[in-house]
Picture 1 (cartoon, helix red, strand yellow):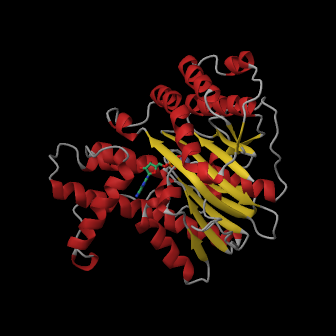
Picture 2 (tube, protein in one colour; picture 1 turned 30 degrees about the vertical axis):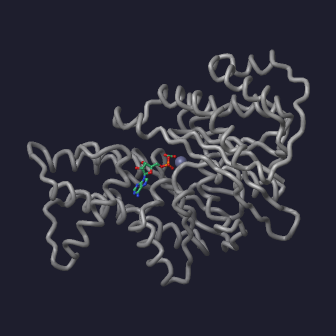
Length: 391
Ligand code: KG4
Ligand code: ZN
């Protein structure tokens, strides 16, 4: 089974081709090709992601990205001649995307049909205008190539991004698991009793952890996205000043760390930084020192609440997903604490931490394998910016 996967929920136009085998007792999922066309350089100028800009860039990038992925996957694909296509219907689907329609039509008419079995597409959550472009593109492609489609929840993609190893073999992750999903838009703790069965046991009441990194970085004039930048500086600062000999110049709160629930609050952290640096001209060392303290504060809260939720839910393993899972300081802290309780923590490879289409294919493969979802030709589903993983 060959899956073409499309993801446009935020600022990456991502398409992947994954070859899956679900006939055995355990599925396999080998990535044949994947492209992540990042818009970061464009959004950097704004200090964050603007939905209208993201949508415009997705429109522009989708057809060339598809073309590249099919080209990369060609050694493993077979092709057949294009059949009669109802362009009127496809034009209706891409009504608001005139340039995309033109590029798409030109591509489809000048290329043969690859033997793809399923199209997976992120339906939400995320930036709604960005999601819509991807959803409409996927519907148009499904119609043009006569391939069934399967809408996927982006957060489920993050949660399931660890279920295959680098070689595409299924990882036997003990269930029930606790998923810590940490990204630019979300911070939630999900009890996963089975693939497809999720219960939210904790979440942020305001900003997401990635958002906290981004906003704090912005206050210090560091570029977007703030997470990697803060993390890089924090690491260097820790190497330069080991913990035992270091007295921090800045002290930030650990919001909600002692509350008797699994919820988070990160907006106060940003405000605390704002007050801590008010009227100051920050030296390079100040920025690094503050980066370290901010990362420590976010790490402490994420660690504390994850341990709490693991205890409360009786999880046998822990899964970390989402862009912030690229942060090794945070993931190592959680891993080291849980391994002493015999609980293994899984995190995605670097490529699958931040937004990508491979994880969306994984979610589709696992849902089809489990018999939870069946790809079809119904085009009445909508993009949903607030889609919950528990829906
Ligand atoms: O999952 P993702 O790529 O997009 C969303 O679905 O939001 O996550 C992006 C977020 C950004 O806020 C970014 O700052 C954060 O992930 N991030 C990191 C790191 N790499 C990316 N945060 C902390 N440390 C990192 N190394
Ligand atoms: Zn994401």
